[in-house]
Image (tube, rainbow, N blue to C red):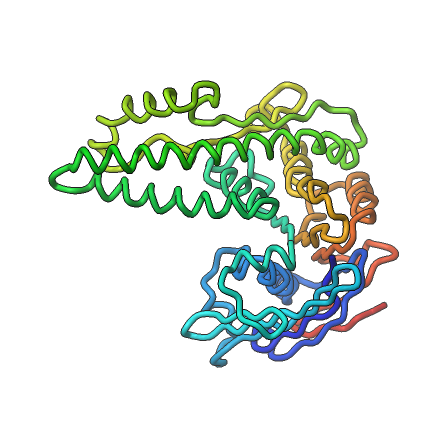
Amino acid sequence: MHITQIHLKNFRGYHSLLLDFKSGINVFVGENASGKTNLLEAIHYLSFAKSFRGVEDSKLIRNGALEAVINASVATNTIKTTIDVLIDEKGKKIQINDKGISKLSTLNQITNVIVFEPKDVNIFKDSPKNRRNYLDINISKLNIIYSETMARVDTLLKERNELLKAEQIDQTQLAVVTYQLISEEEQVIKMRQEFVRKLNQVISKVAKALTGENNQVQLVYFPYVKLDGYQENAKRAYQNSLDNDLKHKATSVGVHREDFILNFNQENIALKGSQGENRLMAIALKLSPYFLVEDKSKHPIVALDDVMSELDINHQRKLIAFLRKLDQVFITTTKINIDQASIYEISKHQIIRRN
């Protein structure tokens, strides 16, 4: 899978931009605030219909313009697909091969993009919410059933919280919603557990390629209850938390509270790992799902924002050697230090291709 062409109109700081891309490594080089990361945002939008920086769609429209447009061509083997995105004050419209889509998740099946951004270096130290987001995003790409199940979980969780906030608690309805929530959550735990199991089969290999060392790397997932005897365990957990839930008018247990850690040489990297180890393992974590896509023609596109800045020369070389094995990679940097790559020099949202 790779993007062969992208055309931007009034997207971020770009008035009009047309670029052709090759497979392999593509490098966007330029000073900070020159427009490098904006290009990665557009590429990521083709997969998730949102900016990875968390900004509202309206902020993606160039100042003074009424709408922003992203047109792209994506190739998977001999199949070519066009994606057209229109963003205006009313929202967004997305077409695939000139036909509107009913679900945004459809984009993931056409353009799977893995993004690493600078803040990801703290993924093991940050809020558990960020690690759950990592699970939700990556499992949804591999299994559409997961995203559908999580949508039902979110709906039931919202309904349960509304019941907890009521002046008069409807105990019968609360019990019904809790039972439904427990049933849906079992499937989430199973899929999260299976994903982590598969991830552990590849992350050590990725980590070795990035570090050059045989470190022990293992993800440990903590479901809110054990699957063995799940129904009784879950009912007990919700019952034990009921008084607290009523007091705080919010659900305090469930898959929306789960977490995982990464053990590096049998130590929690968030607590014992150096800054450099956290950075390299964060990169390994983000890249590992690439190898869980069984159909090689659908391997994800990789977009790395400012990934080189805090790596020493040795680890930069190891990362580049690793990235050369992937189908298509986009990297932003302030310096040109990558041989045998397509180089795009960016200055004030103007681009010149050097090779």
